Length: 564
Ligand code: ATP
Ligand code: MG
Picture 1 (cartoon, rainbow, N blue to C red):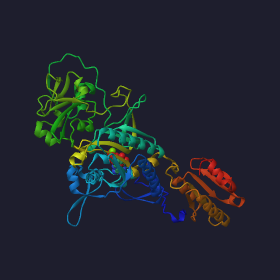
Picture 2: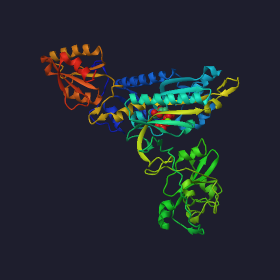
Picture 3: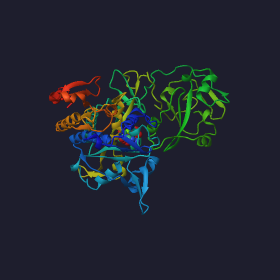
Picture 4: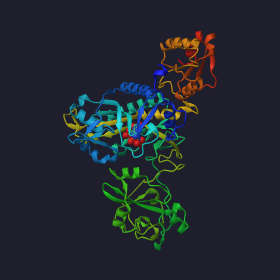
């Protein structure tokens, strides 16, 4: 392809709106252009790379028996009502209506559509298992679209769905997917980990997220050095304390604590370490308000709390709701005489004689103990794990790193088949809800993740598996006929076996070189003054120096150095 015919609007200045390295590099190298917040045009270089990523994903999906479909973007409201997600998906679901005021969702994911599709066709277990996938644009009205293609409101996803008559079959496809994802991300040259994750709103009990390691990553991955343990911080279980305090229970004492609003204030006032205090929070679940008590120095993990109560919604109760129910300010809450059920973290269960709010504004109670002063309705793991703490399986101290979620595999079970009546007749002629799995890869996010990990101070360098072109052929001077003729000949020859980007533009050599480094093709061939002596300059994108190579030996030189 001649660069004069491409559309690569590179920038000299560093774009100020860029929020991450990949975002900046992709703007600078003329790959994307923002149309609205979280909505981007993909320019030619991007499109070429996306095509390559999609080819790899397609190949691996078909390898494990996936059949490709292309489902509609417009989803009738009724389908989303059936699954209950028209409400539950909330504001992230983009909605439109047609001329007859019929409402539609712009698909953020396709469980409803695919379930409706197959339930009309699948009647017998004999047609199972079945795996369908598509590569398509998704819409999510993200609260905080950012980092370019990493979190867009319109983005490309590969989503796959599988259907099974029994767990064994679901397990097999889940494992096949897991392996296919590992191959895909390896081929894409991403440094990734598969981690245990939380099911989130989509449901399902068993799930792994594939995380590309990067400092910009919005997820924290918890891992240990000595084992294969890795989990998303939302999910990473805390070890249950083995030693419980055996201190004697002291007399409770109600004290005035005016002006104390936070647990830090309380610890200072009592001259106690934060670890000897507690904090009480009230959350709203499907089943009403619940009170949760954790140790004063810890942070509440809402994902764990939500999973514990198996609740579709989880919100912090508002100050008004708290006052209405407990008649006390949020800084004075506690489990003693609570009108709402109390749940304590395992750490609190192991404590003795701790201070709590008195459910009376401006008062606390000292030396409180579960079992004597209140009765917890339940105990659980409600907090975030800390770096350095022993992980739940006892395999070592937790370490943290940042990751970008590039893919996720889920076992959905019968969540959608039950709500949407997808049944088949099993071997004994009995109707059975179909078991499902769903499997996503953020294609456009993957592109950003690759850039995030493949760059230096001059620009991007593409892994060979996805590079938009193999060779960047550049004329140093378009006024010199020997140069342009030689370059044209080389372009024809090299194009037979390679994808060549030929910079034939009438630009200064310096501009072309800078663009070339920004765009980051694996190898650059410069046709310059040496052309008259049959010599060109060859430089791998990451090489320090270029090499003079005889044109007659060019193809073998490229092959020997694994450039072509
Ligand atoms: P996140 O937690 O990052 O919001 P998610 O868990 O909601 O993502 P899934 O529903 O699992 O996302 O979607 C499958 C894949 O689609 C994700 O693994 C991710 O790679 C990609 N993806 C999700 N949301 C976005 C987005 N807003 N922009 C780009 N890619 C996205
Ligand atoms: Mg996910």
